Structure formats: C-alpha cells, structure tokens
Length: 378
Image 1 (cartoon, rainbow, N blue to C red):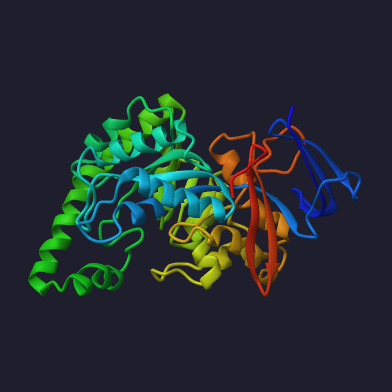
Image 2: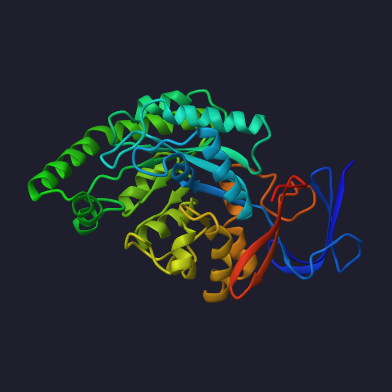
C-alpha cells in the first residue's frame, strides 16, 4: 500500500473551494477533509486541482515536423510533447493525428500510423508522464481520408474522431477574406492560381465530404468512439452533426451554432488560447462571449499547452457568474465525461489521484507539481 497526504491546500471541488487535506492511497483519492487533519506535504495555501484533460491538441505535430519538410525522430518528438503537456498540468491528453491531406499540406499515408505506434510503444516502455489517447482529425473533403482512417480500424487507443472540412466558403472560412489571407497571400498565389485552387478545394468537398462523414460516423458508432464536429457555423451544420451522432462540437464559429449544439446535448469546445487572448486568431467568435452566455462547456489548449491551466483562471476573474470550480470543470470533469472517462476529472473519493498543485501569482498560474494516479510525474 502506498499513501500520500497533502495538507493546507485550497482544494477545488466541483462546486466550491475548500481549505483542507487530501489523502491518497494506491493511486486513488481515499479521503478529503476540511482543515489540516493530517500530517503530510504542506501546500502552503496553493490550489489542489484535478489533472487536466486535453481533448484536442495538434501540439505533437510541432515537435514531429518543427520546420517545413523536417521530420523529427518520433519517440523524441513524443517525449518532448509529453514533457510540456505534463508540466502544464495535463494528465490525460488526446493526441491529434491528421487523416487526409488537404492543400495546406499534410502527412503521407502511414506516417500517422507510425506515430501512433510510437506513442503506444513509449507508453509501454514507461517513457510518458501523462496518459495518451488518440484523436483522429479527419479531413473529410480529402480524397485519401478513408485510406488514412483505415490504418486505425482496430486500434483501441482511438477514443475521439473529429469530422473536419476546411474548404473555402463555409465553417472556419465563411468569408473569402479569411481564406485569401490563409492561402493566397501567404502562398503568394496569382489571382488565376488562387481561383483554380479554390475551385479544386470546393469540388473535393462536394464530392467527398458527405460520403466520408457518413462512413466514419458509422464506424465510430459501431466501436463506441466519441464523434466531434468541427467549425460548425449554421443550424444546418448542427443538424448534420446530430445526424452523425456528434457529442462534442469543436470550435463553432457562430453563436447560433454554439447555442444549438449546447441545447442538443453536445459539449461545446473552444480554444483556451482564445480565452487568454480575448479573441480568436482566425477572426471568429470570442470564447469569452460564449462563456458569458452559458454555452461553453470544454476548453482545449489547441496549440499552447499551458493555456489549458491559464484560461480557467482568466474566466473566473473576468466573466461574471463563472466561478473557479465551474471554469476548471471545462478542463477536467466535462471533457472527461464527454469521452466516457468517468474515473478522473474531479477531486472526489474513489477517483484516480490525477492532481495538480497550482501556485498563482501576478495572474499566470504555475503547476508546481503534478501527480498521475498518485505518482508524481512533473
């Protein structure tokens, strides 16, 4: 039997913050008591919060392909990603792997399967601090989407699949101004080349998206995999998501889509960097506005791991009616429940001792220590 005791902590529970002590036994939370009733590690008034649950991060890609055309050693890339994730307080992470290459690039068939194999090998070898699952980001407009997806047909680590379409004139790129900046200006395309590029992408979307969405959502329903929509902008998009059995609405680009998704029982996910910055990097709806109007459920670090710890404190400080427990639920219990992980995400007796000691000074929090199932990992 192994035992840990933390005392003099501000324990963030589901609906309150309590000054008290927590006892951990054999990797699980054994007791929570008000006041300093035990002798143990003195938190000196720091927060004790559940380990963060990250559902959507493409941060691993930045380590695997740190420059255009560069491919890093997969195991080394995974370890670098894992270390940054864990030190940000994230104890459960869904690593995004791209299925299907669009005109913005992508990976060759087999690369993502090799990355998944390396993640699973690293876990078996005890290299990883956080627990890793797979999130397949399926570019349903791409000709090779189903070919890439087939590589994961029998992989039990796949727990989340998102259905994406980045063709111009819809969803993330509702206006051509946004799309022109992303593709024409940055690539230096002529007017003629850009027009051909847009026509090609729209044609691929019309041809591939409907059958690919249907095929992938059917497989997910059969295997019990959570399905996410992506960049929904209209009520028609939400209706389509409902038909595909979607439980997670990622990055809706309008308030109407976010509200309809939330009311349909989906968890609405937005980026934590959007919260920290106060706006979307692509000019879409601000996540703080959704939070203030009661239709934001989950946050994702997206491309900045530490933002997942930072954003809940920003919400609690700046948005009326959102307490720290409610804000932290967006990065702990709600994402865990959305993907069926009911053994974590809360400081509660009987759950996994995935815990983070958080010190906050001058606004930005720091994870002083991180435990996964009672074992310190950062």
